[in-house]
Length: 150
Image (cartoon, rainbow, N blue to C red):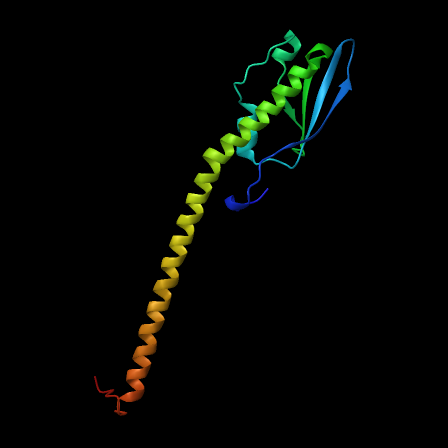
């Protein structure tokens, strides 16, 4: 995870394994390359990509662990391939959404912040230049006593 939108890299699946459950049930566990950003996880969790298979698979909601690097999905054995393809599609969708919606907004915010900082820096330099110019004028002018009677 990075705060620099220019350094963002898509999340990828690095591993997937089945965990056996009761009867013909299993859990597909997918390992992600890194902990995704909150906005990425929101899109991942709110996908509308349809699932086709057993009622268990169609009703299942992908669960992301507390570390954020593993996704699990309850399935029937017969749903293994469809579930694996579905999770890959949801990862791809979340990456595309994040890269197309969030990263540009982050870039715009960073550019706006940089522009504001640049304006402050220019103002500071201008004020300092005016003071430097005043110092030069003071050094060139003959020394005059200051009238303190007013």
